[in-house]
Image (cartoon, rainbow, N blue to C red; front, side, top):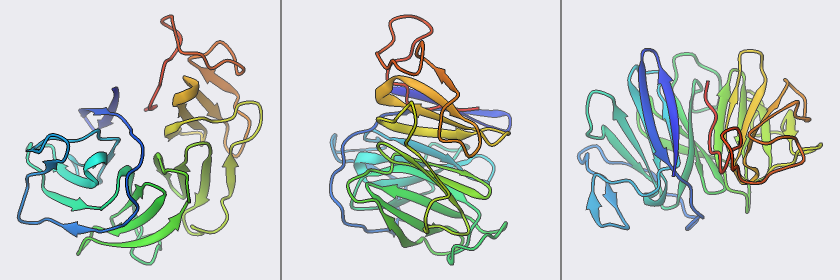
Length: 249
């Protein structure tokens, strides 16, 4: 299990996350407005997650979404209560989430609030302003969508072995840049981060390292968790990583 640290204003939230292989492909989205309990299919109990893989903060102060991966659902919380505000179920595993300011027509709107969900290889845009309706956006075939990062105006999609960067206004047309070439390569990408200079930081789980790319460059210029760009062995010392799953700033 891995621990990710998210900071929002003056509050901190810690989430225990892990990922698993995909199950199923069908999509089904429902808002459960009258039931705040969430069922763990493996343990057959309430108020338990099954290997949650992602957490997304909302622009509503103190609210956040959790990708309850093996239960195939998104659970919406407010930090003032341990009870879920709402549950939105898919019939497949949910691996990644990010909230974006676009409307149902995929147009930028600073007042809009939509959730992008990576459900196995499928990407959906879900309208959170009124009804919880979802629109299919793209299918990445056998590649699971393991991470989603939004940095105005770009959307970064982490697949198993590459990251695709899109201008939000042009999605899902051809990506403006694909991070999968050069001296590094990817295996098992998880969460990524865009810093204030536009640089991309990537947690590469199976290669036990974090890589940094300057804006619009496909060659990494910084490696953390390994002694150089050519190694990827699990760490055995305090400056080496093993199965790193996320990077945060």
